[in-house]
Image (cartoon, rainbow over all chains, first blue to last red):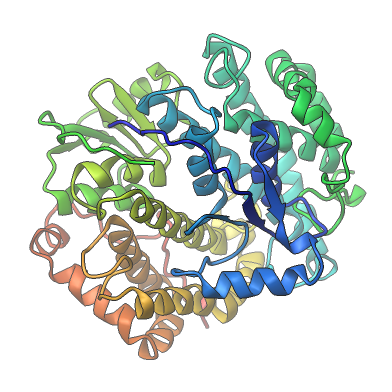
Length: 244
Length: 244
């Protein structure tokens, strides 16, 4: 199977995601920024959330939830799916079908980390406030820091050790590297003790993080107003009581 | 972007997944069965789990977890990724890039349902037994049945209403239909009261379920010894106390 490539869009993409948080939208933003692809972050503009809702409900099929990307006539939702769309179009994955399946596989594992991180502060219900599930959050965060962070980061450290380069797929950056960077930043924000302890023994993850941060477009982006700061409405939240 | 197609494998696929449960492996099995593709369910054979572990650790990159599919030299992990691989090769998705992104998008949303269902009996930690997190499981299951099942199933009922056919992508079956069928069966097993209440108002989901069950290869498979029964080690578990 060949995943053929077309030229990237010349018109700006529309990224639709909730304003005020990085969330899953940030994984898409990092890819768009690294690609130097023109995009409009719709919901951060005036009356942006109304525009997002209108676009979401008009799509066929309507996405289940943001983020979604509008690329000409195409509306693509689900973070890993958006990146599967963008990756080959913008040189964010090596050529060939095997590489794209590997990239997508890593992206889905990274998506699992993101979901599990979310559930550390919302272990009972998305519809409840953190304060109403804090007792359970403490338990879930304890298991997450003790077992899941070391397991996931240890896995990716091993992948890097066998990839033949500094990145997940080898010597060239691909889009899951950008998402893994974001996860490392986010875990370091939310669970700094655990993350720095694990990273002390993970030289390849530290190297990947440094390399991504130093890429010219990413370095510019990270200090630009387009980058939302980590905060306690997003997925990666710093609640000191969750990492005593 | 064109997702080109190649001929399907003539050699049997190897499916690697934990024996004794349906789990996420079942979403792959349903696709292989509907396709009539030859496959070996490795871990269900003699010394199968040892064979699975050996193959998993030999792969580059090693999968984070089963299920994974061995297709010739390729090892593909993550359920939605395996289905992205199989779908176009076996006529389980309409031709064209838009259809494949839509199928993958639905598959990822279905994967989210599966993960949330898992967490109804494991809201605190995968590493703990159900009995050790039963109190929290009751709370999570209450929110899941009150909010999430109606939201997810309502979403897919609307998608079916606008697809132009009886299936998610229109008049032809595609692989997310098989996974949605499995989710409906699983939810009906685990949370029968909620599921039958929601399905009473969801004629299109009922129709999809009946159509998938009646497809000749699926109908044969469901009564074959290859189909593992639902049980309380899997993802969809019937614990009466979780749906009082």
